Length: 69
Image 1 (cartoon, helix red, strand yellow):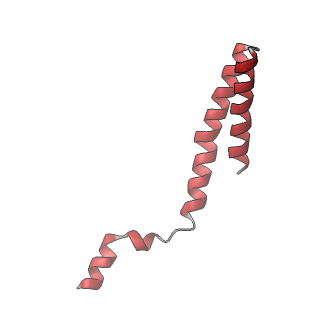
Image 2: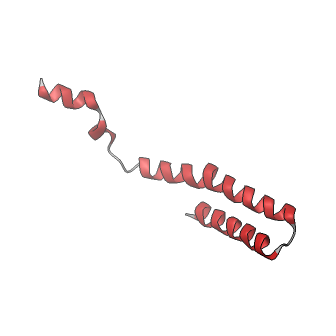
């Protein structure tokens, strides 16, 4: 959750720099770090968190075929 909030903060700061017309290089860095944080930290941590709560055996096709035989 902290990665998602930090990436939203970085993207929001980038939007602020874009609207106010402040330093162009800082704006691009904020957009870039916000996007990298979202895709390389927030998304994988969410997927790992959700993966640990699922029962994979429900989705295996061979197990359901063995029950039919």
